[in-house]
Length: 228
Image (cartoon, rainbow, N blue to C red; front, side, top):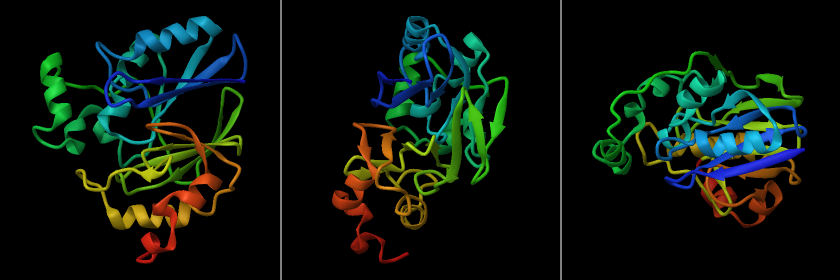
């Protein structure tokens, strides 16, 4: 199996690439922000392993996770998979951006004011199960960071956690359309029941496991979750 990660130039967003073997099909997770986009870095890995991308899995609609979705589709014709509540932000990311915030400033410097959806978007509902490039994937709706935040179980071995769960922390809930109450419910109902052996691939930072986070992450402890 091939598992590569590209930390994006802006915000260090992890773009994960999964493939069963050299010369196979693959899927890409959260192609983020870079100048001009993340496609050159992704292309280098695809060429190195002779991979064919057939899907983009998007954990949520924040621009630091979706900036390169349309450019990647334009280069390779790769459909995107996203929860319907976050789909509108592919074409209009401003709905999740803090006005005059850091990303706004970056976009102005880059001269970018308009976005478009990729040519094909597949909406994912909670519990959807499907196969991509030989991997068994289950999508689980995990709101709180954004309304449509989604985590993905891959072969019951990996959890692609986006900005829901990090090593030692969780995603912010004080941004536009974030919800502390929804995040606490997600952590209790979606994350805590998962198997300790799952390897967690977060949207930012280093890999971890569910077992490690269950022991040491303060946001998975009863004191934080008591209000749920």
